[in-house]
Image (cartoon, rainbow, N blue to C red; front, side):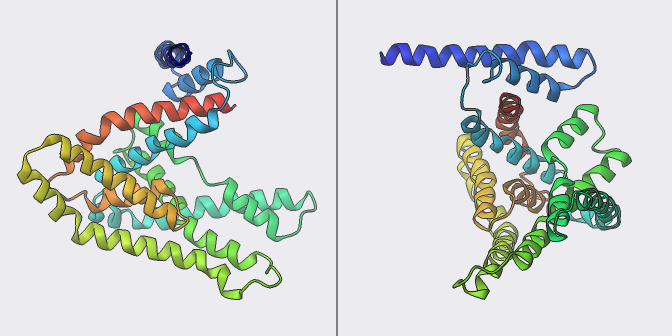
Length: 288
């Protein structure tokens, strides 16, 4: 029975990989991009297609690590000095895009007769773009290093940075539960700030000495394990602070962007990133 169950799981995995191998090149040849190919493949094998996978949420939970690793690699390419040069686009263009889109969406939702705080918070959350999809498309087209790509990356960075103020705003607007302490509504904000500060401290003073120590051991597998530890550890720290795991991985990448081990870290993470990011889009397709 166990062997049969294992064989059934293997058949589903083979079908999933086969669907991706067929759909992704086909969609790219049609000029539609690999993201739509993954989504279509996931839709075919998901609950509303062949029903080979009935619980896509479980796969999606693991596959989200692909987005985390993708943002870490993007962070490795974004040196702090370069981010400082983009500060005008990040806070200017990003604020303009988010502000205009939020205002339009708020006006539309107010037209349905909702109470004022609800349309604003709903619109603010709705206009936040999917970083994973946009960055994947920019990477496929080779636009990340171009001026237009840098403008889009700046907007995405501003949207990710906006998570902390939005959490504070939600905590401020949330009704106080009778019997609850008033200070508890600010606890989430304090945890987020502490997580960010902790990650910066560790990234600035601990990561480079750690990798220098491991490099002396001349064990490639240990360096790979350490790279995964940094990516997943930063993601977990941000998650504990109530923030985006992808934002934590991106920040860790930025802190290591000027390290002598930057290229080795990118080479170690890239295979995991490619596999899990593809699985992420497949799982999203299953959920459609």
